[in-house]
Image (cartoon, rainbow, N blue to C red; front, side, top):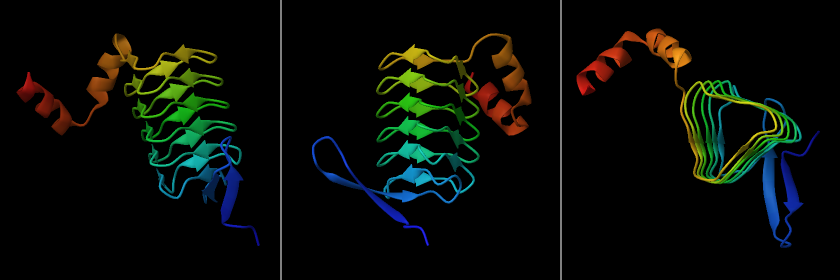
Length: 150
């Protein structure tokens, strides 16, 4: 029977505990919240206080840093680093080898091409025709709320 808790030593010598996620066997901090339907590949890490939403995919070798949020149905490719405190929206696609700086925000439905670097504090919003199509696909009650706010 496999161990449910893994202990690793960081660069300062501190022992950090992780548990294996049921879907994909990735390493997840006990204080992180990862949806059961999310897939975390075996060599991926989800750090303390991070959140990973429904049906999200975290690729091999990727690292979701502490306090980061990854939305529902978001795809994070291989060897991606999502920095501390980042907010990644729902339906986002992040290509392999991307580095997202601390406290960056990537809006719902956005795409980040492979090998890109998103600077710390950057905000990426979905614009243009794709944004218009997504707003038309939104449930009716969300469209009404938007009209009232306008």
